[in-house]
Image (cartoon, rainbow, N blue to C red; front, side, top):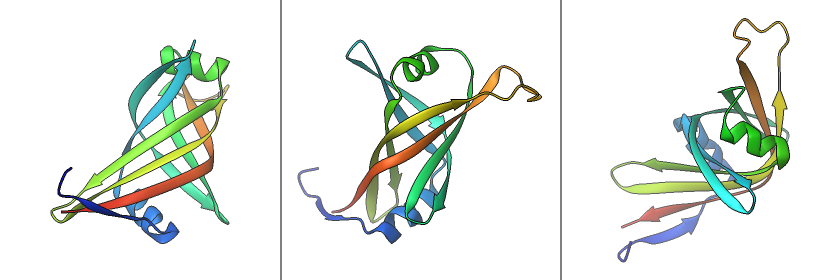
Length: 123
């Protein structure tokens, strides 16, 4: 990273990057210890608010952590041949169970973003 310069991403840059990516890293916390998990994601935009959607099994450390502490972080990185882009966001997660969902061992994690920022790094 010694030879890289960066610029702050605009809101339009962030949306363009999100449209190119399918995997993010979700950070949860348990007893003041962070736990990072790579997951597939989708998102939607409502006015200026972004909400991430993650499908997950309804068990495991990530789910346990969110159940006890709803605050999470999301990290996304996109690389191309001229630059790479990083997005970091923070928000509150909700666990949504579906009683009649055909895959009853699954649930949706919905993350309402309260902070999002990004950088584009160039060599």
